[in-house]
Image (cartoon, rainbow, N blue to C red; front, side, top):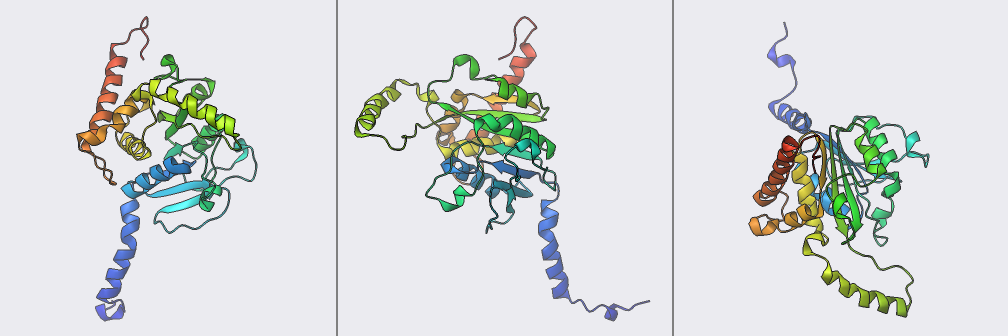
Length: 287
């Protein structure tokens, strides 16, 4: 038999080994996250919130070039060489949660120019690729022009692309209908800028419940929804996001922890949707 003196490892070396293994043990059981379109103010805010929550074992961001990051638990996944998303190979390790955003990169940020941002028309193909990567939960932040979303589409599937995504069979699908700010076109003439400035006064005729939501509050809503969302397809209407935007008045902070006000809003929304489905009949379809 070997005696205790046969092992050269000291107590300090054993503590170092345990410390090295601790992050692996802590990450066990946590989901893996893949983000497409982590650009712009919104993408940066959502990524910062989710990564800072510590609820994900690893986060990958789709990019077109190899990059390095100083954030622990964050890496970059290169898009396929083919421009056709259908030909992309799945990720080497299965991914649990996919997040898709469409905000264009800020060109004065060099890092964002290397991040891959999908076009809305690519959503069905991208969702299919994410499904092949093992994604069970998909969140899509669907932008729309302020005040121009028909009432009938606020709480349901808006087009064939969204119906195709829902038909893929994700365990949880969340479509977040977020109003976007109107960006000034490049190369405008003086008269065009003047006309746009005069027409901008019409924004005061749009209900406040349909105004764009602050990126920090939208990120908090997504973070909270991912914690509470039950199986099924869910659509977050602009009015719900407006309530989320006001959640600071209920005591929500802007820090990495989710405030009670936001959780209360999300829980009430999910409960209302559950009650609507329970009370629906074949002659009276649910909202």
